[in-house]
Image (cartoon, rainbow over all chains, first blue to last red; front, side):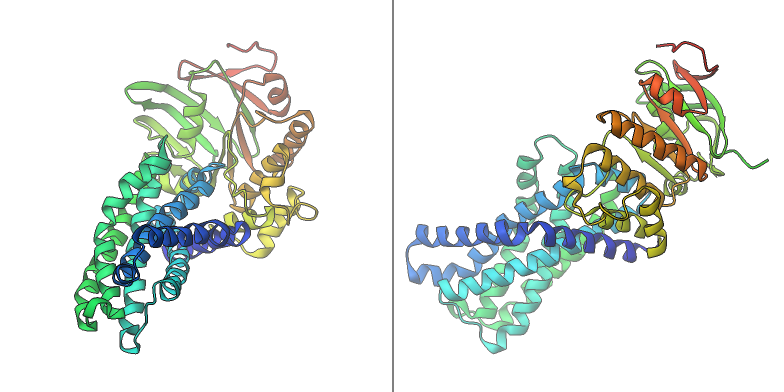
Length: 227
Length: 222
């Protein structure tokens, strides 16, 4: 069985589990929505909210991602399934790529909903000439976040106190994504006079980040979960 | 005569710097149900993990299902099923989805996974039930069906009766006898000697990292 075929199986299995349990729709999306609204209460100024809306979208995404990552590894450790996968000789690169892909699909859904919320709540507009940049940013940032989340989720899964360890490991590592994705989305939406061409260098950063953590994560995942 | 499923000769395995197996030798043939007995820390679990390719052999020789323990541990893992205190199931998936997933990891087709479900008696009433809603015995049966779907030829079971009530234990024993009759080779580490002993076709004692053949009436060394 090829790595990609097993990765597809693992991703499909994770999405099927989400379909049955509805954690994304019933818990994570409401949590992300509440986070956005609370930010709005705290800042309490339309002008400020319009300016910082792209950053709020990505902050809410990252906090919600922590919940998704905890969940995606909880289903593996509840009854020892992750150990069983390793014991069965399933290629750890395939497990990493499959879990990252499943997580990426859920993150993409989350980001689209949060962007829509930003348009409604914070009066953002999406200009047609910024659409390609916006979509590219979402995809590249999502790949980077999914790779980091899967890598550190797998690492934390083997430790006691994983609930607190995961944010400590993950949030500093995804800071470049937060910065790059925020700047690129600002450029795509034309926030504070930014233009579309300002966003592409940030997309370059996001792609490099995603490739580095994707390749590094798939190589490191086996030894990490074996430990 | 066919090649042995497990063939260890003076095998040494260490945990940290402690020699958990200190020159273990054993030969197990296809269809055997072997009970490993011995006190805690004697090396029973390490022997199971060595046979699963999870612990490296540091001295001696060993072949599992024809694969060399020194150089082909990853290949061994694909043909061996290990069942410990946990079942390795996804609780939010149904019985059928779990078995199909584990079968698919080795390329098993629908017919094979259905045959595994039939063999373990989970093809009808239980197939669409989420694993979370099953009893402990039903979960064990589902886990064994996953081993069948994965085409595991050597089953390594560590305290398989733990946590099961009397009827679930009977159910498990019947399943294991049936699996052995169908060609699976089973090694069971257990402290429940009366029950596991009646199941086993052969009993060996593991004492201080070494293996001693035991007669059926011999007392447990622990």
